[in-house]
Length: 277
Image (cartoon, rainbow, N blue to C red):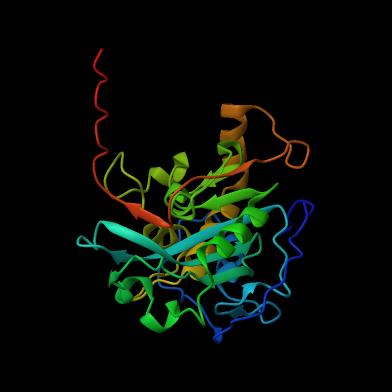
């Protein structure tokens, strides 16, 4: 399956802090809803790391795989503060290209004044050793890397606003393809009108079981890209209907940095006090 022409790639390199080559290989568990076995096979191949482009844990920017026009992003977070189930801090960022090859993977240092009260290891896969300063990269470095990767590219993600929020980045909505918002995928939600989980979409459309035990942000990004590839034409049609024809490269994609730290808090926003006359 071909990808549109490359828009460009980051040439920034890192002093690698690699941990190991990791293998993320979901197994075929269910029959799929796809119209042909060929399409299912193509999707499953995307979920399997390529021998030529292996997953290298905490590699930073890949020395082999290029991002090109489409990239898929996923983040893992840990719990912080007195309410760790509500308050989160960024702990890992992973990016894959159109073909599912890992182009970026990094653990992220937690701010000095922040205490991790729940690593959520059983779900996030994050352990204390991953966030040591001699392993994880500073948040600003990771954020700068993502700015370069996002610039001029189409971002694929599942509920990707959460990932952008914790990275404190903004990406033009015209250049986002969110699998949690795509109309055909939303029809598969277990509760009508709600957002379908990535796990459910992967099971029903790709025939694979993901997120068995601890999550892998690389695996989740790869699954998200595989889902996008199934319905690329449909995604593009919805974007054209909403925004008109858009050419990537002809129009600059702005990536804006917000303020604050790499922390996401759930809860009701505080009401603004009315100014007294």
